Length: 292
Image (cartoon, rainbow, N blue to C red; front, side):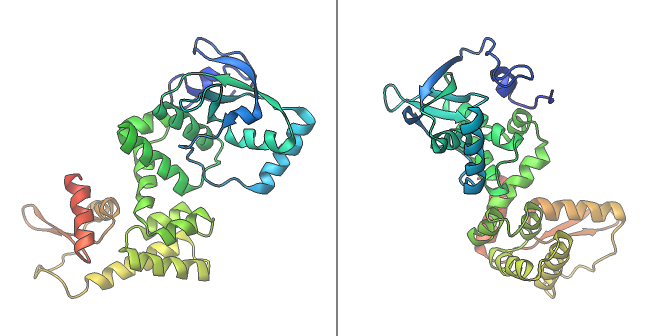
């Protein structure tokens, strides 16, 4: 039996125990056989891409064995006698492809935020989302449903830094996000590129794909570009060598702000130098530090 993560009762309450089709326990949910054509996809589904070959294989399995676990739906708020998917859209698509007329579904009431959270959790647990879809789901829960990063991390069973790092991918230019969605770049590549201004990030992303660079290669290249961008633009302070502890602090600030940061320690205290390339980047830094 897998360890349950996040969501309190979550999917573990909807599917208690090891048997996937077990009856719900005190969730207000009811198992029903519902016409496939009376079910609509969730417009807030975080997953946007469904692999056609994988769907076809799943459809063949469902045609041979039936749908072994019910999907989760809620009554439609727009149309009577219809239902909206909360979790299980991939299985619903495959069932429809296989020709099934009716499928088992767990019907429950769910607010928009909870429906998105359940869909997000199911996809994250199954590793069905690409990094950009996952980050977009996090952002939607934060912006539209008033989740904090701490609350979101707790609910989905991830660490706060993992959520923060995922959200940083949404700062990347659209072209770079598309490369991550298409599998040309990994989330690790994206995090390294997020330290650069948009145009430089896109240029380096294309080089990365062209040369099949590793994440470490990208980190080194990004650091070199940041140093070149900062070269000759000092504020007159002599740059002292940093202790390992101070280098770690500098790197954490650079990572958190996604820009060049320099520490200048003095006998007592010191200064922090934050670089920005243009007015847009300055506004981004202001939003990040002071809040939008």
